[in-house]
Image 1 (cartoon, rainbow, N blue to C red):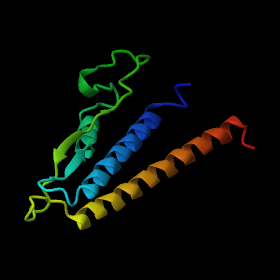
Image 2: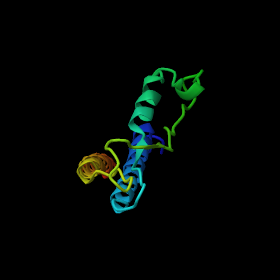
Image 3: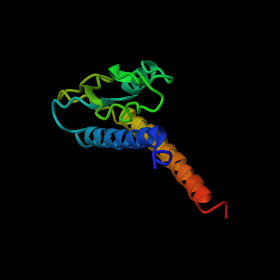
Image 4: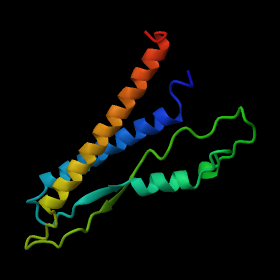
Amino acid sequence: MSLIFDRLSSTMQHAMNYRLQRHNMISANIANIDTPGYTPVEVQFDAQLSSYYENSDPKTSTARGLTVTHSSHYGMDDPIEKAEVEFDAYSLPDMKGNSVDIDHESSKMAQNQIMYRTLITAYNKRMSLLQHVISGGR
């Protein structure tokens, strides 16, 4: 069972959850475009994920302080689950103190949708390959 739901599948699942969380944040920013004093928020996960993988040794899985001392030991399967939320200071506030830029938010939404669709396509292809293998190549 661990071959079917390995670290790649877990990482893809976490990435899809992140994309959903980011979509919700961008939607909230757009919904608050007329709210006085509103500052848009951004989910910072990409930097955390790359830091996680840069700090992990693929041979020993020393990510986040865990060390695999034997080849049969499992490494840490869960990448960072929670993303940090930061204020997105992309544009200057208007007269009401609102700094939501609809063009910037729309471009972030489009990019996020493309990334989510790409993840879904990759995950579906992976599952279809597994189904092909399970059915004996028929």
